[in-house]
Amino acid sequence: MAAKSGTFCAVVVLAKWANAKLVVPRLAALRSNELVILFAVFALLGMCCVAEALGLTPALGALAAGVALGENRLTRQIDALVTPFREAFSAIFFISLGMMTDFSYVWLHPILCASALVGAVALKWVAAASALRVCGMDFR
Image: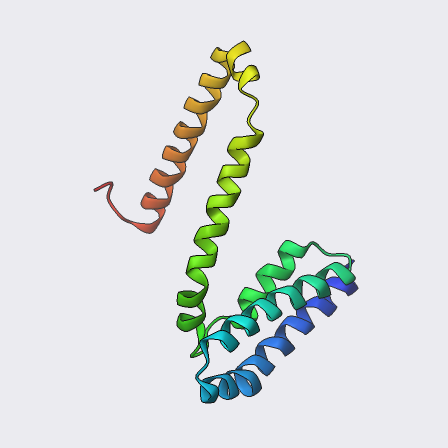
């Protein structure tokens, strides 16, 4: 697993270098929004496939694609172009979670579900307050 992970890290570093030196200048010269989106999707799918082929999770491939595409002159353009897709897929994700909810379980175990909800909100509040303190910010 260590060898596979090391190989994957080398692929990510190589992809970041190739992206910055070879691909981004050519894409910028073409001035095509469609090609930028196509390249971003291709890079994402490619890195996910490489991760899967090495026995790693596709989520790690998605993270690697973000690292490879990040910090270049097309980053803001890619983010602006992909935002509508991200928002649409977020909506689909949360709708599908809502469709999978078993409301009969909530009806049969209201105290447990209410306790879990209050606990999750409290945990989120504690995490946010802790993050503010660590960063040296006040609660306002």
